[in-house]
Length: 289
Image 1 (cartoon, rainbow, N blue to C red):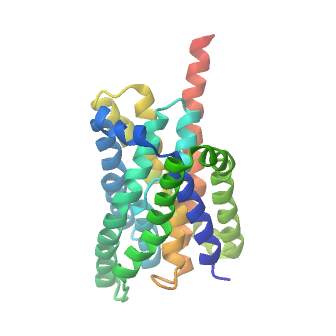
Image 2 (image 1 turned 180 degrees about the horizontal axis):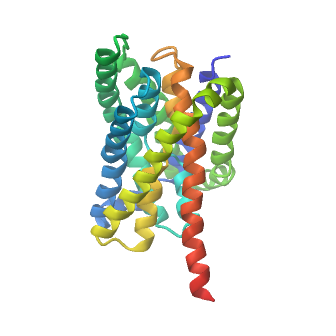
């Protein structure tokens, strides 16, 4: 069974849900705090792929893992980041704005970075890895931009219906992603276990460095603690469903094995970021005593 037929509806629902969260105030956030938006976008769109490439290169990952690690790092922020930001008492409006912006910008940056990565891996491994950029762009528009745009339109012209739909769907985002991870895990259990040491190390390094550098950047720029937590979460949390859709799609890579890093990352990012949030909540509880 090709997991693309499970991934696509989940990804569409996730992006539609994100669209339902967007309104004029979300985009006005850019004007009110452009530095925070720019820093978050930089961390997610430039810093994370740069870290991923460095780690994959230094660890000499195999071609398929190299491509898979780069793919998850190039994807936009996951919609669950908004929930995580709320739990962490972060800036939820900033989180929603960053997720939306990264979803739009990566429509163009993802093909460019993955094209470069495919050429690099092909040149250094002797394997020919082709990336149909046009098909990748079209698939991302259909699965990312269109459902997000429909969500925005529904919120704009039918706010009451939008609110009711959002109440139902916002509780489905995290379980849907975990269901997808479980299905994929069961389908590729042997491959995941056989390579978990290498992939787990590479992706754990990627996450931990992203969290540390995101926090350092926020501190140097003088952001409030709430904004700092939001940026850290946004940089670390990626749209694993999109990475799986690209890797598994018959139109693009048609290589479910390439999606395994996204599954491992999805599991690790929830653990690492929940630990990060728990650390903050623990400190807050200590101060209140």
